[in-house]
Length: 133
Image 1 (cartoon, helix red, strand yellow):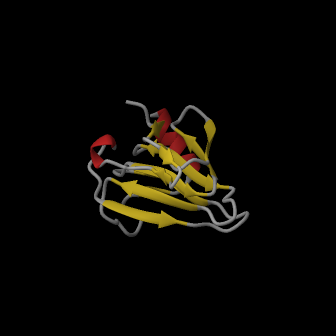
Image 2 (cartoon, rainbow, N blue to C red; image 1 turned 90 degrees about the horizontal axis):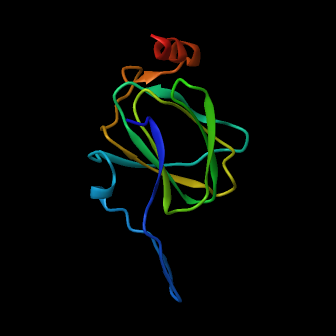
């Protein structure tokens, strides 16, 4: 199973505007939580891997660069369309960078909110060591 991949959702446009429906059946995990993320210029978000959580990120407004690493090296993915999402599975490092002005990222999660460190690897070197095991 891929630890990250782009997913495309329908984009329906007409003279009135655009509609992007997100059918939960099209998301490859049972959605337990949806939340919004904003950021500030020059300050990254994320910088962790989840131990038990899968997520789907969609830039519903603006654009963002997401750096992912599944243990084989960093890859950068630009999200700048509300009908394209980045699926990030557990055990995949992810960092959110370069928030354009007024960017809003919608995130779908496979878990309810898990506070504390029980769901996170926050040290990238430890994450990479785990990948080599």
